Image (cartoon, rainbow, N blue to C red; front, side):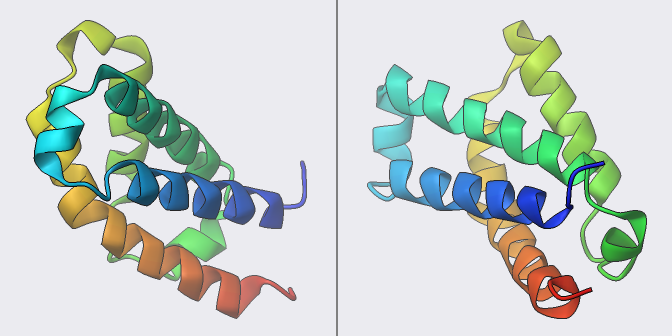
Length: 113
């Protein structure tokens, strides 16, 4: 297994990219296919990387429904014809900030372990 800290780096990068890509707001996101593609790709990568985090790290943050993160990633990757942009935007607006906070706390708590 790779050093799990590499996945923290990937998750942070994905979150930063998504925030950057969506900084112009919801209307811009809905009207730009390239932005949608970039955001969805980064959500997939982020979801995959969260699966690689040690269970103890995730257990320390039960406020995040890690199983749902994985399920959402699987929908984006495998059920792409069923992607609902309203759900994607809701994740960006409401779930991503929570995840970002948890990832930063995990990095703070476990980086040197």
